[in-house]
Length: 557
Image (cartoon, rainbow, N blue to C red; front, side):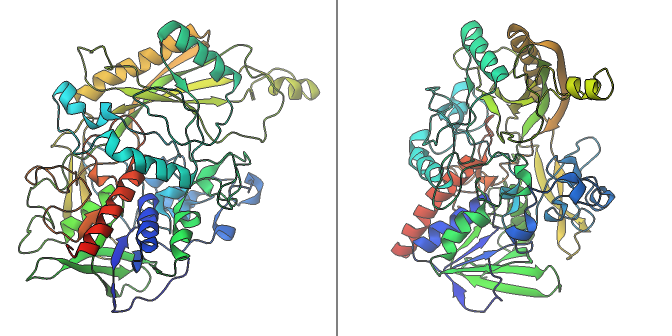
């Protein structure tokens, strides 16, 4: 994607951020005839040089464990995806600080490269249902979303068909079926667990629903099962914006990409109050520049978009741009993880080969709590991502030929990793920390979040239920996992709603206060659900773009 020097002409739309939603917004708006500037804080991406999925450990200096990673990226390295293979995609934590108290720690994983976190996301692609959109009406906590599943379903269809999602229609109402390519097959251990869950519990282990191709699509090749998707994919077999949506936008001839541009402000006209563009600091030269646009769309990632709005305070909005409600920054949500169980299922998947092919997806156990029954100790629910690992046993007995034979035989391990909903809480928030700035002089965020009592009670059930299900499937060596952590799925903090006094955005992701300002990333979420948010974020963005284009044509923006 070429870098183009900014000009002082006025774009029809400025999109801040180039990740999962930024790529979709660029595609939808350029294909509708708009001239669009995508502004990205990181550098350009060259797949032929930057993608490292086919490198093996002896081909890199430290075999994947460079000391430079932990030295410059001590927080980013807490993510499995940040290694010597790709650590330069992630922010340098020393140059990009944020603050959080020791009592309420939080790991903010950030990328600064064209494509952002779309390059390393886990690709789990699950639809939300009205169990999620209307959860408040069921249990009385928080607010309902201002949309229903019927409003979003056509946009889920569009996103899935363009990016390619493999899976299987299985008729589970609260995990709606989609437009799927054929699923990747299950391992024997998963098939055993699937059969057990259905027969003994009436629960559903679903084939993986992932943005990995199993059939060719728009010139993209199907997955070739090399495994480490977080390092990129030279065959474009999974969705990321630089190889799927941004090229579609570029094909229109109406896309300008500005990289190495760290946005600090949304600029506004003091008389009309409308957004006029953005101000950014060049990441390399530290020069301050502006880009002008008729519409500004923030897709910088939930926390980063909020940071920009908070830092764009004006006389009219002293507590953050478009924050007449006082809600901006509050109701920050995530999923909790770290609770679940693992074990081995005897006799399943025995084989004598540890190398490729390696299936890049897991399977999924759908939520089964608080559907028709009601727990007395907590509300909402959780699901499990299910993974298997091969029978490689370095502790096997023997020596030489005997050891080589035994080390490759064993019972495959199976892991149930729970992801549960953290309910919306006004006291979970982010704000500017004016005592700390990044390397470009932009104020850092102070993040203050807690899991909450509801999540802590739910987590105990997550671990206990995982152990119970594995035991029923005949697993041995069962271990419960009970270390509470966040799921790196930040949403909320600029939530949508019908009431401008209780929300930042309307149902189409448009600011209540500033008509030509939109936030089209996960910041708009009203509740977190227990499903991975990225597919819903993209569907919401496509729906929002349709509305934006219509409003422009009517002259309303």
